[in-house]
Amino acid sequence: MENVKILAVVGMSGSGKSVVVDHLTEKGYPKVYFGGMILKEMEKRGIEINPENEKAFREKIRAEEGNDWVVRQVIAEVKDLINAGQKRIVLDGVYSWTEYKMIKHEFPGAVTFLAVVTTKKLRYARVAERTVRPLNLQEIQMRDSAEIENLEKGGPIAAADYFVSNNGTMEELKSRVNEVLKEIEF
Image 1 (cartoon, rainbow, N blue to C red):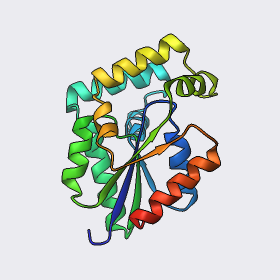
Image 2: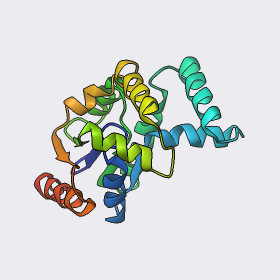
Image 3: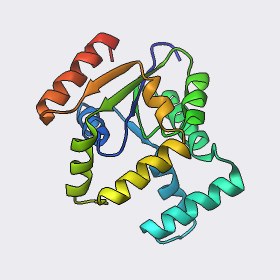
Image 4: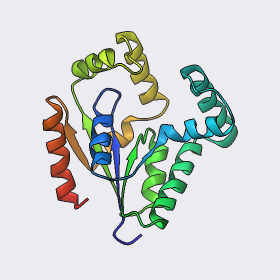
């Protein structure tokens, strides 16, 4: 794994993670999307992809295969990319403390965590306005609680190596991300 660098982008819903990941993939870096592991497996099994089926399947696979099933798939995909010669890889969607620890253990010294943060008021407004999976105030508050309490999502954010504020424009966010990329030589 010499010279391999993995950038894991973390943050709460509506923080701007997708904007950052899109910015990185536009630069040519391959991404491994945690949620994509569920979708791939559903497709493989011929299960129709919709929010209800996704939730049911995610719970089913974790009950059958363990809570670390998704991260095990991610690790395998990252190893495949490394074996194919990739030296820079983006991780999209490290949600739990277990996933954080497994990624750090599996790729020692290669992983940098970047947390995207914004004010709660702005984050909630963004989630309400988005075209894909918009949530009202009560729904986003419930989601935040579930992700923090059930997935321990706060751990990877709190333990991040770098934090970028996303309270301004997309250009400002991308500029901050580019500064981090330069600093970590990504």
